[in-house]
Image (cartoon, rainbow, N blue to C red; front, top):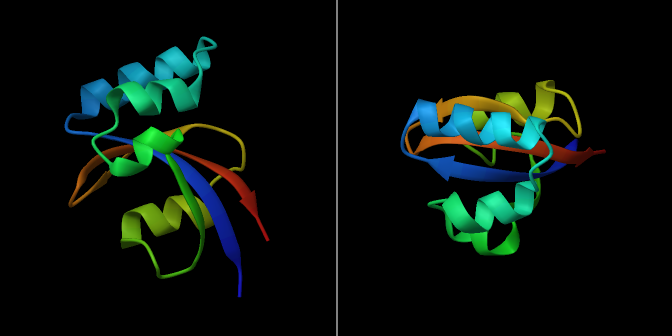
Length: 92
């Protein structure tokens, strides 16, 4: 089964998510921004969610993780939890 490893930043607004994405594109550190801004407990680990298989995450997040590019900030991805900025760090 295909596995992905990803990190994310969860925020409450699309605008905040877009602003963080722009900061990362400008050279800001993803992990540092996750620790400062993410509403998910994973923020304290730089947003690291570990490895997971298809279907283990909510559908919108799952699709981005398994169909999007590796090593590139993606988002905003809207789910029932809020807006995610995510980066797939590996897929196997």
